[in-house]
Length: 428
Ligand code: UGA
Image 1 (tube, rainbow, N blue to C red):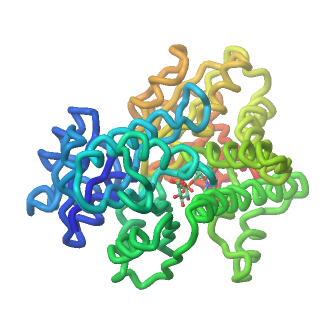
Image 2 (image 1 turned 60 degrees about the vertical axis):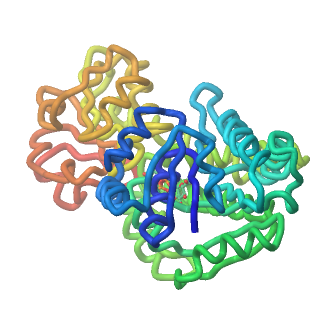
């Protein structure tokens, strides 16, 4: 099939190479000429494991190309909308890009003969496709949804850092369809995947995505709360999580207690779900508690540093890890930002290091933060070291010899760490 993909971030590009890799003809559309140029030269505009190799081979064999021009949508059968819905300026969801993509696609559809399917992959709250996206498409195209064009919501469940793998090996495919014909068309793209394909309504598909992210976040905040209690009682929460995880009703994944969750998805999606519930007249107490817990958890690292070395005024603290998780340069809503804000407020000088996220962090952190070229350089001479992201290179014990270490991600084995450093685990 011929496919166009609007937006070339993590979701768009991973989706595009996944489809191109399955033999479809894909054009990536993005309004950033630099991104378009890079893709057409076989390069990936974002850091994501394995993505550049895929872009390079798909561009090389002619199944993938990029374009700035929405006109290229006309030659395709299905358009995936994969633009971002995160906005740091409004600290949450922002529909500017979604609306502009819908207007762009709608404009092309006004002149196109024949049926066209729009598949919304961007994460949007329940109701958004029917209240915002479809009306925008209808206005711009002068056509009616279900007649002139079809619409499905086909949420993505990609984990940043593993996007390519997630596209190739999804757990399930969700297709929320406005009309049966477009549901069939999108299902045909996924027929070879040995996973459940769920056909449902548009709003239910939107909710499945939000509920899934909320549940993952709930697991994290839950185990962080258990971990905070364990810390007080002298129990290792990792022993507890490991044993809980043997129960398949619970499962071990997403029970890693630590500095809390960040990124462009979990925090924003839960905020949005709380707001959606509120607008519908329901106070989502559990969801709020997940967020409250997550706001407080990073502060605990700064407080632990204070307890370990005394007043932080004038002290130097090394912060290891800035990205919201390893394997990505993304610092959006990263716990590191909250830890650093708290340290600066307490008067500490902060020396920060991350293997790939320094450039992104520099754009959002105060000028007073000093960025180091290596973990060893950040640690040298620091009064205290706080580990916020579990990059492999932070698991090297010799890095911490003789230091006060606050471990927010279990990078060291607490049973050994006391031998070579003054070790404090956040929840253990
Ligand atoms: C998340 C979901 O996991 C994906 O399924 C979803 O598709 C994606 O959001 C999205 O909505 O696009 P992502 O934001 O890439 O993916 O990150 P996660 O791997 O979920 O990690 C989120 C945060 O939780 C990270 O800061 C991580 O360090 C933290 N985390 C994760 C924990 O603190 N403990 C855990 O056990 C697991």
